[in-house]
Amino acid sequence: MKKRLWSGLRGVFPLLLVLLCAAPYCYVLLRSFWTAEGVTFQYYYDVFLSSPQYLFRFWKSLLLSCCIALGQVLVSVLAGYGFAKHRFPGRRVLQFFLLVMMILPLQVTLVPNYIVLERLNLLNTYYALLLPAIFLPLGAFIMTQGFLAIPKEILEAAELDGCGLFTILLRIALPMNKSGLVCTMLLSFLDSWNMVEQPMTYLKGIEQYPISVALVSVPPGDAAMQLVCCVLVALPPLLLFACFSGDLVEGVALAKGEIK
Image (cartoon, rainbow, N blue to C red; front, side):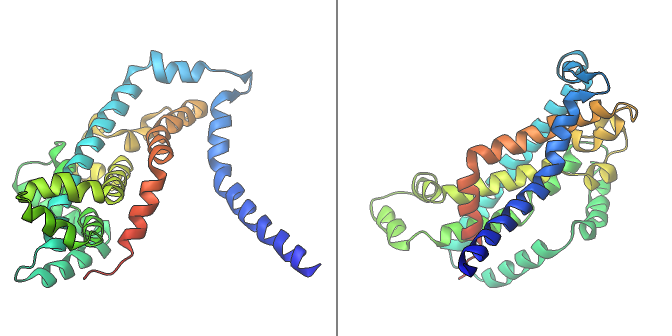
């Protein structure tokens, strides 16, 4: 009897946790349809069709996030493969600084980045958001862990067959590290999609803000309009997670290994 009761309680607690986490999202979705007059799709029509400023900011933010994700993947693949499969002087020191930079809060790097961008005359441009985000260290760490899991005998056999460095990387190492690649791309996209402090620090005009910050420009009296915009912002992360959740979990699991 006690075992059955305990097993029932163990099923209740996860259910309560899921309900508590899902409650805000369900409220946003339901409230975006429901008004004082009843159920309506007018606000969805306004945001998706009759108000181009919202969709313009959405597509602009999507393009910016995709560029950041692709740039960070390129840098992370090259850095990760170098750390994992090549021995060179100072490798351990560079890996240590990589880990240190990973644990630094974003607020610590805002001022140094601002000074560098100001001297490069890149403030108030999208390069101010693009360049610092491309070189974040998390992607390099994830790719390093994924490449370390590839047996070196496979790469040595490819070298004996006459494959060059980039042939091995593109045709052997990357396909075998697909989960790390997808994980890096998703995390970099989500990080750039949700950025708030960087646009407010590096950009001056609200018309340049991505949609994650531009939500504040929605008229405060239109609560349903604000919630529809929240649904619009939540669509890309939800779709990406639905498509690549398995690779994301596997990539995060790979990143938990120790650097060798």
